[in-house]
Image (cartoon, rainbow, N blue to C red):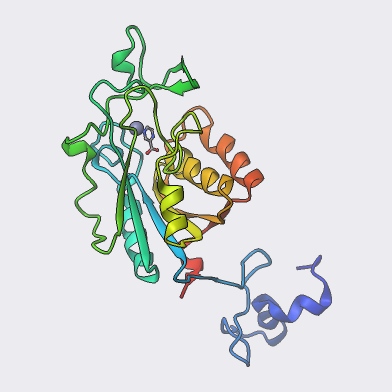
Length: 253
Ligand code: VGL
Ligand code: ZN
């Protein structure tokens, strides 16, 4: 409060509470929202018909009990259901691996899950077998109910190459087709929710930016794996690329 410039004081509830010694509503006399503290954003993000909600990998294997379970992975579902009605366009992704996919530690003798290995396109983290084509683990979580989704994009089906991002495989050059799809349909801004925050969600956001699209990650509608500092590392990249991190409560129509 002390550091705040005087002419801005009136916008803060604490100022009015302090000067009137009364609880103050969250709106001023003109109906404008007063922010509770300096960091709370006044503006909300308005969803337009050119925005798309990309729901990444909300599959059984990434949820509790799954082969590559993300802590509280299923907690993203109610958050996604809350915001889905705001969007005219929804796309789901589905991690969709061959049984002997090269990202599985089981196909590399002597290797354990979560170790790193060098593949033709660079360093690759090895994972437990997960999201095998046609398996129950690869199905979207049964509680996820998004019947209006217009596209289910499968990725990671080339045995030789993993695909975290919904736009490019892990060589960062082989396209999945999603960039072209969005372009043809004039969908120009991408909001991303799902699993995992520090892998498929963030890689998708970074690639959206590479394609010149504004990208917003809905942080409370994501959960992270957080392997060896992966969250801190990727968050530095997200900031550098201009990916916006927002909360589902920031959205409105
Ligand atoms: C993912 C690791 C391996 C993800 C997919 O969806 O974030 N992570 N495959
Ligand atoms: Zn995978």
